[in-house]
Length: 85
Length: 411
Image 1 (spheres, rainbow over the protein chains, first blue to last red):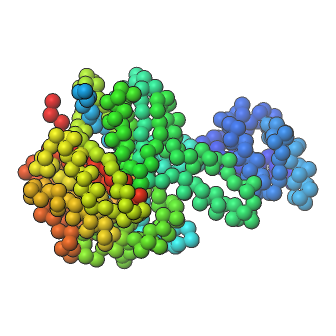
Image 2: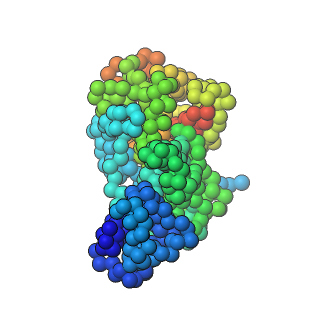
Image 3: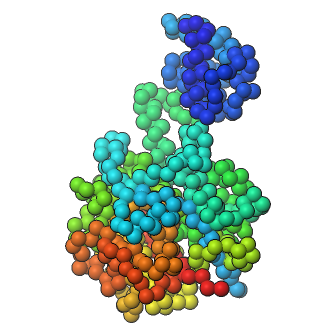
């Protein structure tokens, strides 16, 4: 999966869990919480959806790596690769 | 001790046949029922009363997704009631507002959904939602309402089975009289059609209605009645002490005249006519009235074969010396809205103070003689000579009974 494809995965999840937010112009290098209303429960939703949809586990200590779209792609890339995606 | 007079100053509701008091009342007077077929998980097609209010009128999509159906119904009803009351809510001290919402049950829907969810993942509990606890706590509908409105006073639910709608109003009256709050948002809500367990439980009890025409399925007092139609819904009111309502020039729908709550202490599910009668009589006595002062009785009757007979038996006995008292039933239109039932049924009758018209009990093609009452209003609305006091009955499982009397406001 390319970085852009991974970012799209994350954006799709965010669109589902925060349906009132406009996700069309998210800046990849700016923290997601600075660009939209996301609270800690929402981040747990992102973690849960990665688990449900792709079987990817994100340990609590590594939640910080989901801060921006860029950091999501960097962190999740190897995990998708390990799944053969 | 002289108790404060408490009055109803706003109504917000959603019923299977209406999303405002005006629409609800119109349909009650025109014989429009609101029962339809829905798909219930594990059980297939069932009959139910479904509300079609616009949840996004007062909630964001995310709030609907994160919250519960009962919470959404409560938010809709609370905001509609506040708007109807014309209270300057911005200026209202939010810590002096109480939210008291009756519920038959809460948490079944949310728990069933999560179990279904993890069934897709071989029942691994790591897929269980982190929202489960805030969704399933018993105070959820009241808590979501406090969040939505920024109300910082007491906000909780009252669990009283199908007597709960009345209990919301009764408890609010008590809290206003105690001076605990200055404004109460109260009544009842139900999301019960979203849990298969309620349907399956009533079906196992042989108490679930069936009919080829959904709108004819809920038929209290009819010989062919065969059980309950389960519904969702809500009705919340703004209640205020009379002096506060008068000071701001509020429209007053009616005054809480009396009430009583008691328990059968006799069976898990079977009603007890003696205790129900006692409940009604004590409510009338508390109101300082006699049975002849009660112009309209709204029955709890759910269209179970035995329950309807027992309730009418109780009413027949209590009102033996009051042949002019009219009697109706709202479940024949909307099914049994469980925790919302009492609150919704009261709302449907409140306009009678103004128009003196009593909505009927519909779907009575062949009146069961065991349910016959002199004042039963059947199938068509009836013009009353007088509507100055309404008795609202709501009874529930484990033998909880509530009777609430609302009277025409006279200064």
